[in-house]
Length: 79
Image (cartoon, rainbow, N blue to C red; front, top):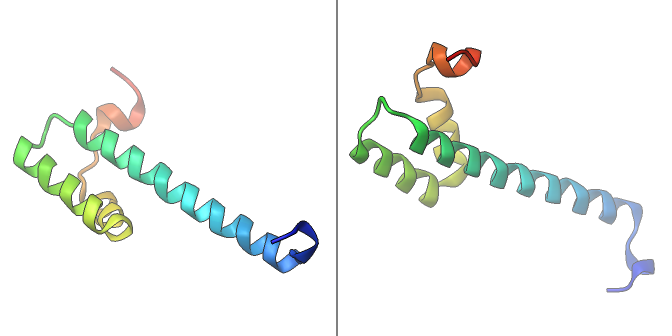
């Protein structure tokens, strides 16, 4: 596929697809790191969350973000 075959719509669609793919990977890494940083859940729960986000990435990430409890120490940035 040569450069002159790409129309404006094709370029725009490719940019949007790349953006959403990049955001999915970014969310996956952030949730993966958050699961391993948490001290309030055990190893079995961590393994369950990791398995869920590996097999069903978008749905697993959304479920984790909704279901996780908020902690004041990490959310405010104070130690």
